[in-house]
Figure 1 (tube, rainbow, N blue to C red):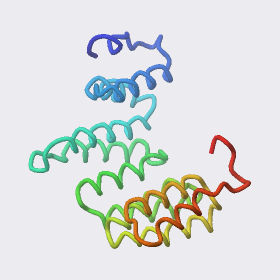
Figure 2 (figure 1 turned 120 degrees about the vertical axis):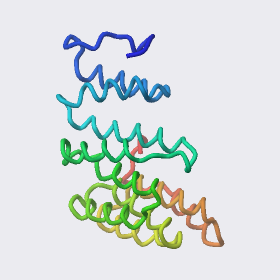
Figure 3 (figure 1 turned 90 degrees about the vertical axis):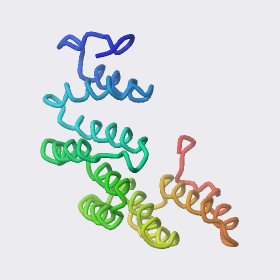
Amino acid sequence: VGRGAASVELTGRVRLPARLGLAQALADLGQAADALAIYRGLSAVAPETQVSVVQLLLAETRRLPKDQRSWKEVEQALDVASKTAPDSPGLPLVQAQVRVAQGQLKAARELLEQARDRTPERVDLWVALAEVAARQEQPQAALPILEAAEKRLGDRVELRLARANYWLRHGGAEAAPALAKLEAKPEGFSRQD
């Protein structure tokens, strides 16, 4: 591994959470190569780290101009993650993110719909599905998905934020009243929400 914080000896003496934290910190600092080395080294004991490998490779690939992008390494990492960590909560989202980045919105939507149908209590899948639907079709396609999510899950902060994001991006005469309604604080939310 590189220099500085990344030069911490990564032996069995350093516990898994510390190594995961170091890898995340390096990724946050833009030191993807060092973070990838740590995540790959942990994949034997923590297979779910393969999802982080895919996320980092995807971010690195997206930074390149479109004509210079190669998806081979991302696809290989995604294949490994699918085989070694098929039940990882982050896997369906990263699979969909890869498909969106590749311009395969229909495939991304299908992946998210399948994941949402398997685990409908996960609000992040509903929000991601709404975002892909908005990109795939007309922006207003997101609203029925968010409404269905609210019926299923109740009033959630994540759903309000997704709706606010929709209205801020798309505006229109309905935007101001819709945003005002979202701003109202219901009794069920805490200060942390």
